[in-house]
Length: 400
Image 1 (tube, rainbow, N blue to C red):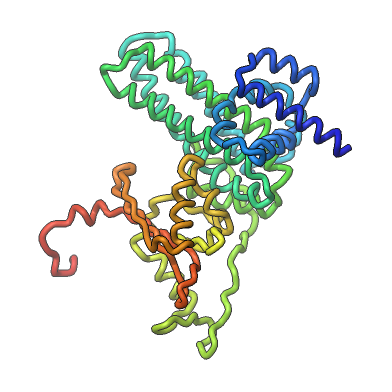
Image 2: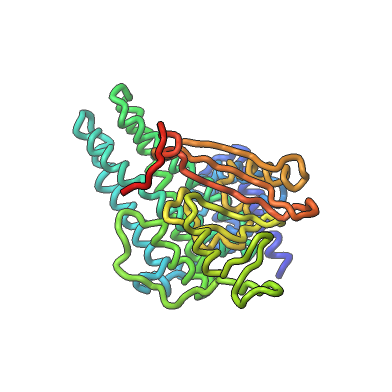
């Protein structure tokens, strides 16, 4: 039986590689029907894992992901597996499915009717529609930050990597259309062409989520995993509308017990210069005017602060997640290089600054070392320093 499964996987791999080499998609579809007939979400997951293991770059799989989807479309045999969750009010799966219906409705009713019209009014309607469509970022962010970590902890890493990369491309394409619509000198034909392209990609992603990702999550996430997903959803947000029902049942209770230090009062943590209770320490860190995230020596996220002013989303699901999985595929190599330079002792810190949504974000990385110099991990500090950069003169008196 295992030999048959391996042979099937090998044939699937050969078919995908032939697509990458330029084989006609209709010919590939005929070959697929001849040899396979149907495919399961598990096989798709295993296929992507195997391609990456054999040396194919995530970006290469991502590049022709839409082609793969066209071959598999209509042949996925286990779509029915999500039915039990799709009927549960407020369950994350149901929320995702309802959002996909709203996304499809927006494309059909607010974008497509204006793609064959010219003039200021159609362009204005498209601008309004694409401003609404860009809220899809929240839909994608919830699956990337709340769902993917649970798959990764079970060793399912390839589908999340590939899907995250395509999500980012869709985000970029939507932004490009919005920029074209805002530029009065833009060519209407180009706007319509790019708008059609991005809506096609959005629809392809809906198909991939409904037919591949949701069944994969259903088969691999536990009841408490779903509670964790539900608990972190509101902070990231939803596509245009909040769900009418909440599925949250119980507290996930992911906190860890902190051992008492020798000679300290019960519940206190000792430092080189003094001690604090756990409540004092936690509250003090969360009131800092910047975000702290600590990654241990093995590259796993161990802790982050939860201040009121957050620059980047930090849902609880990233605890225990490897840092390479916390960044888009195209930027993860930068983070890995920084951490390796800290681990080797080549560097002790690295700074970046970016402009983001009206903020001037200062991002600093520091190597954390023990007294003997051994590497313990990396501390990331993120802060919006725009208000600081705008300070002038002096302020010597307290505000009234």
